[in-house]
Image 1 (spheres, rainbow, N blue to C red):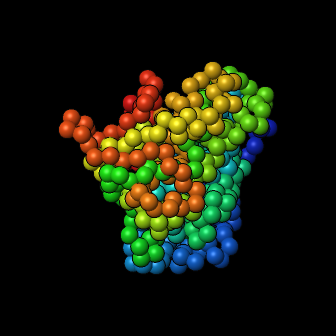
Image 2 (cartoon, rainbow, N blue to C red; image 1 turned 120 degrees about the vertical axis):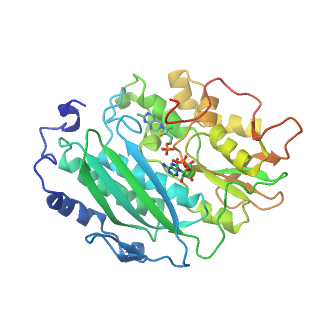
Length: 348
Ligand SMILES: Nc1ncnc2c1ncn2[C@@H]1O[C@H](COP(=O)(O)OP(=O)(O)OP(=O)(O)O)[C@@H](O)[C@H]1O
Ligand SMILES: Cc1ncc(C[n+]2csc(CCOP(=O)(O)O)c2C)c(N)n1
Ligand SMILES: [Mg+2]
């Protein structure tokens, strides 16, 4: 990465020469949250380890990493510059989403930053702001950052681990879908993929209309529906996961874990694809391929017994069926465009 890309505006001060303590002193104040958010944090940043309450004696835990040029670009082909705020927000969102997908609520996070020496200090401060803004604005009302780690490396890498609680309830696993269940979606699908396609295009970001720009914003700062996970659990969801790698790929995971068939409703797919029309028309792209193959929106895919009233935010997009004699677990869709396999870090 050329130096002037990272240290982009007027040779801002970089992390080079700062001691770890100096940098932490810039970050800590930005991680502070209101009391309601720190209710589960017994001991926050500053010691060798943090201490977090496990209200019901069990801890839900997950971890996710973003790496420069794999998960974001500092400068995209369309001219958009990814801010520290974006990366911090996305780190919060993708981790909170995995807790949501279990039907749980987040209690705390730890964050590990690997930074090249030419990273501006302001970019790192911005990241801390994005992380806390994501937690707050996405509605993780009892979650705060309890600690982390700093290190130096060739490219930016941000890892967040998140802890959560089921409040004494049962988790919603991928494996519980039953024949006859309704398949339902909360949140969006394909919007982040449309945003990625716009970012990777040569259509200058400054020329995008608001109806197109929203997709770039959603790729940069996803908005997982955090109320929907616990609501699905309370409504009796039989299986659930978040869509991070694409509806076909993640739907296939639910099907495999449940040893069942998933059938997607063509009318629902057409409706979801219709929402992507502004970006699809601009790029001459296949909106349904984004719906089937696009990850990173972090919507929830859940199954409910037929007859259950779907909780707020969920709409039916298909159903679960028992496997036929020659049928393996998987996703049936009327149309399967060529490139909708979804995201795989190593196959791409
Ligand atoms: N390096 C690893 N060591 C042990 N377990 C892993 C490792 N990587 C992934 N897993 C486990 O494999 C499962 C699938 O991981 P994956 O990261 O694909 O989760 P996901 O929720 O499907 O996707 P996302 O990364 O978007 O959260 C998870 O249960 C995860 O804990
Ligand atoms: C530069 C760049 N290239 C490609 C992508 C797309 N992308 C990266 S990770 C992922 C799935 C979720 O990952 P994980 O399972 O690790 O959460 C997707 C769809 C991107 N965001 N930036
Ligand atoms: Mg997940």
